[in-house]
Image 1 (cartoon, rainbow, N blue to C red):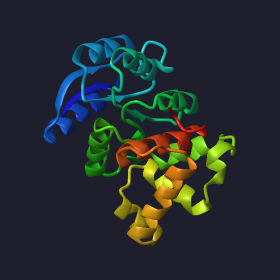
Image 2 (tube, helix red, strand yellow):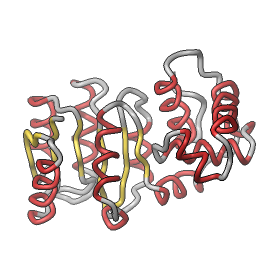
Image 3 (cartoon, rainbow, N blue to C red):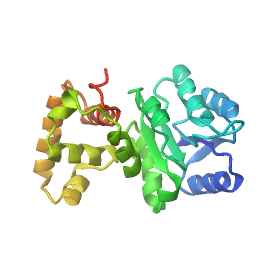
Image 4 (cartoon, rainbow, N blue to C red):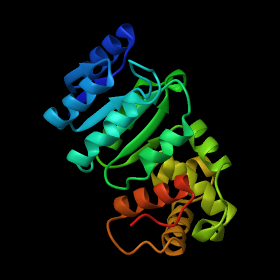
Length: 219
């Protein structure tokens, strides 16, 4: 798996490089600012980008904006944001593009290296990996209307677990229900969000994006 890293803190950047290399990933570029990130993404076209939101020179949103801009030239470029803070506006901007894997993890909540690597691989494969704190803040500011309003509390729970990237068996274990019940809830979610038949993975991602954006189903 080919990875581009954007992180301005040298120690963390070096740590990410060593960690990814130890898990059979190839770091094709590791940069510390927005312009270099954009150039690296469009040149290398990696399998996934691990990006800090705030990069020099202004430490606002250079990292995420560079990644989003690069997506216009590399459609579907998978992006995993690794940030110190939940930036709702930037998170929604990232999630507004329903092509390609997306993830948003908080640096101080990455406690398990194995799960972190799994999150990177899942995003690279077109899936999602969202920190529960990010999900909570995005949902708190939502307009509770549209197709999402038709979901039952249990269906919203299941969709929240899907947003974190959990499989059906993992969701069943977390919610203390059967695999069959999870499948039933997910099918109901697809129906209520009017997701046309396609691969389950594709529909899962579209459902998650609709859920986090608080909007109608992406098209």
